[in-house]
Amino acid sequence: MPVSASLASQAPERAAEPQPKTPLLGWSAFLPAAGTRLPAVDGTRHRAHTTSGRAALWAALRQMDLPPGSGVLVPTYHCPTMVAPIVLAGHRPVYYAIGEDGLPLLESIAEPSASGARAMFVAHYFGLPASLHAVRTWCDAHGVVLVEDCAHSFFGMAGDRPVGQWGDYATASLSKFFPVMEGGLLASQRHPLRALRLANAGLRYQVKCLLDPVELGAQFGRLAGLQHLLALALRMKRQGRPAPPDARSADAGDSEPDLDAMKQCDMQRVGQAPGWATLALYHLLPRQGIVQRRRDNYDRLARGLQSLPGARLLQPVLRPDAVPYVCPLWVEGAARADAVYARMRDDGLAVYRWDRLWPGVPRDTRDFGIRWSHEVIQLICHQDLRAGQIDHTVAAARRLLART
Ligand SMILES: Cc1ncc(COP(=O)(O)O)c(C=O)c1O
Image 1: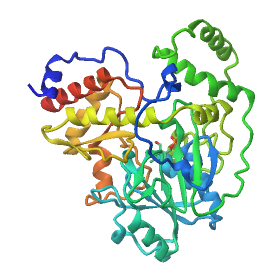
Image 2 (image 1 turned 180 degrees about the horizontal axis):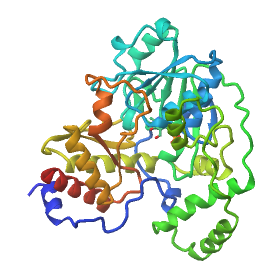
Image 3 (image 1 turned 45 degrees about the vertical axis):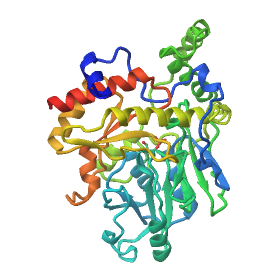
Image 4 (image 1 turned 90 degrees about the vertical axis):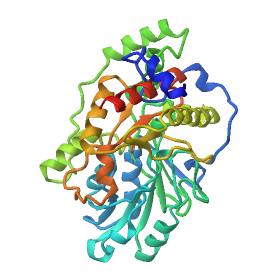
């Protein structure tokens, strides 16, 4: 019997244990591991730390000194946190379509001189980066500043360059690859960075940056031996908990739909420096294990999810120089994808979908971005998912696809 079929027949209806959606802090995270060494976004010449990937995008725009209201090209297939920094910086999103390879459909983009576009965000989706040679050439020809969004691709090669080295600026999100509460990076191989002038975080935030990853790791049983100390620390943390902040931003554009979308993106800390614990973990933790285990998890998912009815992996074979963020599964037909995704969520699987587009995104049916926003389900494959959890996802996905 093929591996996938045997898994499907043995699968319980729900995961035996909940699946962590983000990397976990555990003792094993500190152990050096064997595996391939791959370049990373922070191999660029110039770097500055922020609290998140969205804060890094905002900081990138501020480096450029664009006139207020400038157009910033952004893909129709996006996480709203890619658009919020544009609006917060006082600029205007100008959407572009993507092709089946996830790259901008350059020939369909209106002349920047007509649209007022002065910068462009291009993302390496899913941690499966590709060469941006054609995009770089287009940006140079049109005088557009290229921001390479590496939120999904902290490690790896994008064609013949390391990730982060095609853009005038590159941005990254630490919390997607490291067991930290939040954290981001603004990087550039081409331009020295002007000081970001971030406000120092208060003591409460510093404590939170340390305790949140510890709490999450312990919740999932990864910090054996720390329970008593942790219980005490968490009691202290809860006593000092502030009221939840109002996420409304003063600069958040003036239309109500924009405001609602902005509120959901939590842009509160874009002007703040990241916590010491975040930076310490980022600098201290060995990286080869992160790279290797993410690749292993992707391979395990991909092997289990071959030959599915009405669905396929966008990249069935992982390239040797890629370090995935997720494993994208394309379920054909929006209605079916909606049903499969809803059932996966009900089953407690670690999955995402980018179905919350920023208000006003043009809906061109030839644009793969619009189709992907419904039909691509992102299966999580981070380093702290165990083989049994991956197998559970495979079995559940196969079962749901066969039935739905
Ligand atoms: C492509 C992309 N860019 C930027 C971001 C923002 O990153 P962060 O969540 O660290 O702010 C995300 C978040 O999911 C993303 O997917």
